[in-house]
Amino acid sequence: MKRPILIHPDLRLKKVAEPVADISDELRKLADDMLETMYDAPGIGLAAPQVGINSRLIVMDCVKEGTPKPYVMFNPRVIARSEEKNVYEEGCLSIPEQYGEVTRPAEVDVQWIDRDGKEHVEAFDKLWATCVQHEIDHLDGKLFIDYLSPMKRQMITRKMQKLKRERARV
Ligand code: K1U
Ligand code: ZN
Image 1 (cartoon, rainbow, N blue to C red):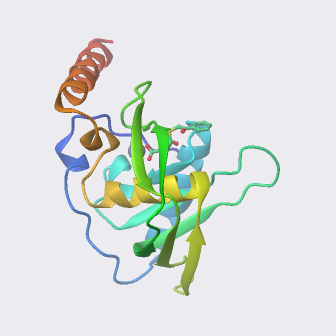
Image 2 (cartoon, rainbow, N blue to C red; image 1 turned 135 degrees about the vertical axis):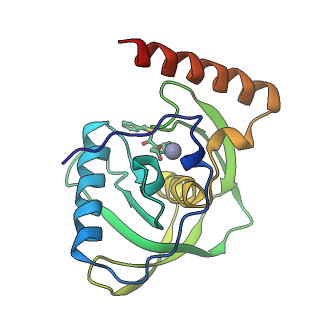
Image 3 (cartoon, helix red, strand yellow; image 1 turned 180 degrees about the horizontal axis):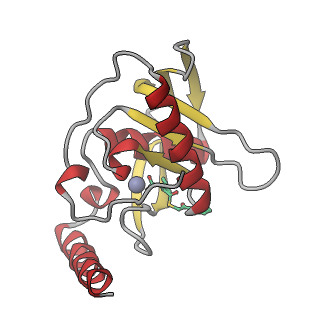
């Protein structure tokens, strides 16, 4: 089942999400719904706060063509980051049609729990590294626009307020 994606500004996107204690069937269903919502958008990642759920859960799949490679990560954590940085023009499904350059570590090691409760550690680079850091930021109430200048952030926020007013009218 597809879920509606919250649009910035929304206080639910600014909260620090709660760690997941037990991976219940309800949480597994949420992860499936988030993957469906992400592929439909289309997007390469999605965090639970973007669908109004205050839990530390993200999904991602950065494969552009060919066999999909979906990740479901509960309680994801960056445990190591490279000195080398990458700049990527990021977007966000909660900030539609707005983009901005963000500098982040080029490689990160991430630890998480999968849908069966198994712990994983994996190194990510390129777009995968950018995406997993963007999604973990969502769990800490942080958006890519928080890395931009105050002026650009304000301009984007005003555009989103206008978009939300227009959507509320129809
Ligand atoms: O978290 C989100 O809002 C999803 C976001 C993830 C992301 C994009 C770019 C850099 C870092 C993280 C998106 O998926 S925006 C849409 C997007 O990037 C895309 C859509 C279709 C094909 C390829 C990319
Ligand atoms: Zn986002």
